[in-house]
Length: 110
Image (cartoon, rainbow, N blue to C red; front, side, top):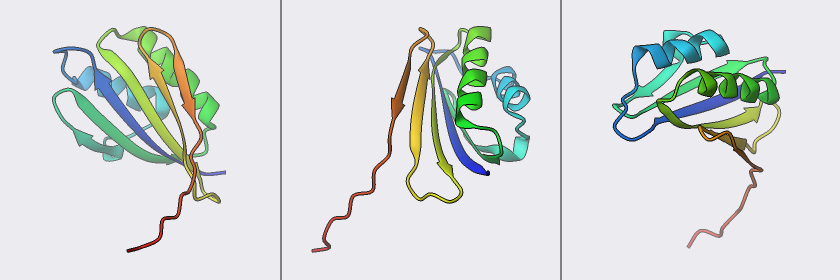
């Protein structure tokens, strides 16, 4: 089943996003340069579609965090192809992970 991912990388302090950091994500998540959505000095985002399960992406993100001290956190929003509501997890460089469940809220137009 295809899953749509939006991965945001945020560096720590004054450490900038380097080509080496981007290559780590490309190598571990099977990404290409075309999957890079935005790149700023301290933040980068990838958008991609994969058959990889969210739990496997989380494991691979944790591996990346163990390989570099420059990243403060990685925020992953994902949605399965047959669902409209995304879920999310954030892996922090101190080892903890936060998980979130998405919800749809409808508000009346005024």
